Length: 624
Image 1 (cartoon, rainbow, N blue to C red):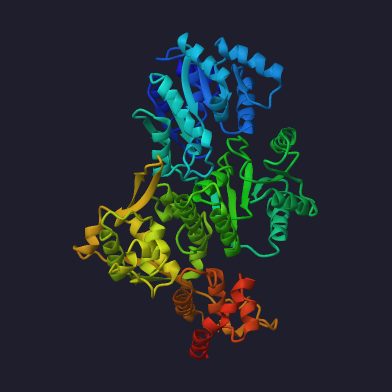
Image 2 (image 1 turned 90 degrees about the horizontal axis):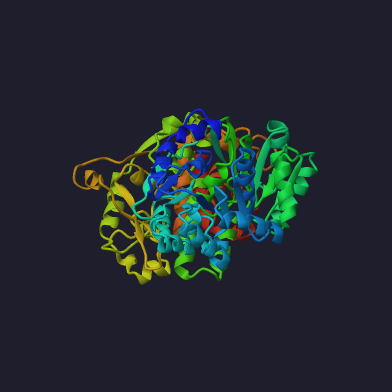
């Protein structure tokens, strides 16, 4: 029956990885957790069994979905396949709701889509579910975009937590949770908060081999750069530009339209009719580019998105992965470009710290997630794909990237220096070993190792730890790469711990290979890069060729010296971004005017020239 429905209704010749296994598990009455990348085929895992009558349970499949636009898209495609599906939501007219509700309560629908808020607020809906269950016509409950149940997920919805109601009221009815973005602690949250009973877990690789990842410095002319890029490389191709606010969406769309680009904006402040108009226009290719907040694109099945651009940093890597995953669902090459500036990072951090909805612990967790994004942006050495997949607990060999990210391509322009970091690695591992039950995240351990004295570190007495500050001579980026390497090689690992509030957090613990370094003499050698070629194309301040770039072999050492100065003086404030430090190492400014013109320099950082002045003078004398 399963294969018959696959071929005759869905017109598909075969299943993708893990689809059949997930379908068989839910038809056998088991709880199921499906973790598949965007475009991996999650929807079929519950849409197909909804049409199969020979399962342990049969009747109506209830699908909990977070967005009306997502429900509309799914129901539209199901109706096109002659499948009895409908949605009940507050935006429908009273007569529409009554008609759909009558079909629902009498068991005439194969699938019905509901919002989590509808489950929480409507006694009428809960009574209808109870009536279906009594008549043995409730087949299963599906929670789509299940990461919304976790406050560490990138799109937390409080009403998702109330969905534990289903397992409390109907423990024998199978549940299925599906998401494209969940690392280990989000997965634990989902299982815990939905009360899933020993769910069968099905996971595909998170690697999207057709996507190209790139991070670019964000300049004042960024919108003009994007417009030129679209008109040059993506003429008449479909794309999404993610912006951080409603105003940014509207302003960016208006400015792109001035360049002849067919674009529009999409955000939560628009009417439902306007959002639907824009979404339909984009899906039918009347609109080429959507400038949107993260409200756009979840679950939308448009296969030919050739580019996804982040105009502003996402708040976490889960959100970044899901949003980039909307590109290239047809398997063809697509580009994922993020524009990065330290100013955006500080703005987002300020918004988190001012958020009255978050307590101190939650603010700290969200700031940590933002710092993971900035580390991703500033790491110009390690494979982008490898960095993202490690975050999702997936091991990936860099050579399998096949130069599908900017770091792997740029590696051709750098010489690799294999540096023995064993002494530092031992200190990091010993630091973790001496924590004695003190739960610290990767970010917090990095802060202890570099000698930070934040309130949390001092109040916990960690500033007295013998390994506190043992990495203070290393630039921040090198510390981050050291931790990345230790995690990747299994010397350290992250352990998810459920807290009293019912949410999981990842804490750093010793990995299975820790003793290889501590007692078996294993060396820790990490590749660092330095430029192979001069950058003669960089204009000098006077407009002539920049002769100061004649000695690129000093760049790595200069950069380290400047980073060390930055670290010693700044501690917990930011004197300069990594982009600025690299440009400073290249140009070695001797006046405040030259200093103020460095790449990425911001007004509030120009005051720090005197902190760098001595080391800049010494480096310039060494070079000359």
